[in-house]
Image 1 (cartoon, rainbow, N blue to C red):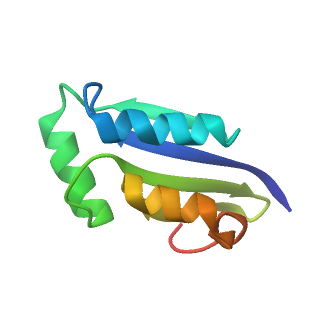
Image 2 (image 1 turned 180 degrees about the horizontal axis):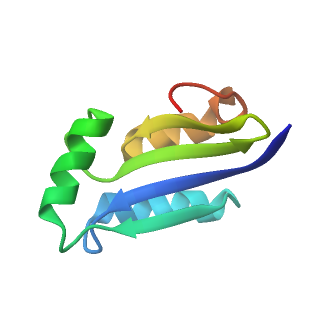
Length: 96
């Protein structure tokens, strides 16, 4: 049983792609959290390594289920637009 799906947008406040990602999620009526990383250069470096993504935003979807959370790594803004226009948003995937 799925309880909820929440998107996390790791970004920088003056990043146009980060703002477009938030707008796309809002327009789609999806829940999201924007994680501002402006003053955390070491955290940004860690995120890039962890998610194997070299630019911002870094977008993930956390699905909270009865058996625990599942994480789908979406990628950046272009990846998000493809994700939102496909059936991927209804399928669970990737890493916990």
